[in-house]
Amino acid sequence: MEFFAMIDRLGGFTDGRFFWIEWHFWKVIGWLGNLVFTSRFIIQWIATEKKKRVVVPSAFWWLSLVGTLLLLSYALFGKKDSVFIFAYAFSWIPYIRNLVIHRRHKKAHTACPACANVCAPESNFCSACGAKLPEDSTSAG
Ligand SMILES: [Zn+2]
Image 1 (cartoon, rainbow, N blue to C red):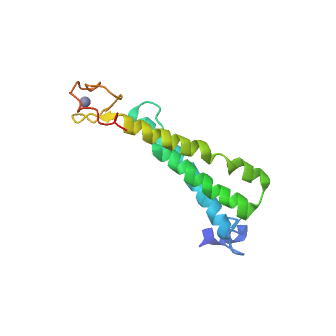
Image 2: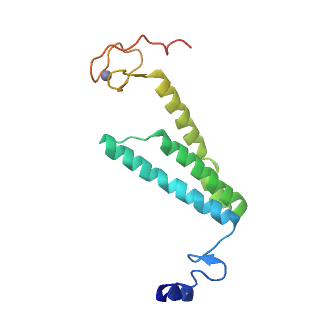
Image 3: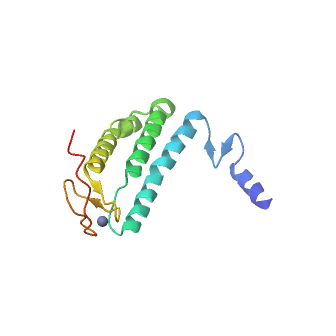
């Protein structure tokens, strides 16, 4: 209770504030954007540590996109600040582009039925285990 009294004295939970932040709808949206945007680095780091090489999973671009849209909404309707609006106004374009390329790349590559290794387009044998890959069905269309 000493702790709460101390927090209270600092203004932590008083006057509609929580953690010294005055909350309203757009503030929640903005902080949600911050949270989503920051989590993408954690996702990317974990993916890289797992593979022991630098990888950018598609989740990274999804989190970037959602985080940017949330922060853009906050900039437009909450903060109404041209600097913040400009900062997030166009950054979603490369995120969407990367997601499109990621999807095309995945579609063009064949997963090995034996070891699940992702093999280059039009390859006949798996580059990891040497197993025969099924006939290429992605070249059509
Ligand atoms: Zn294989």
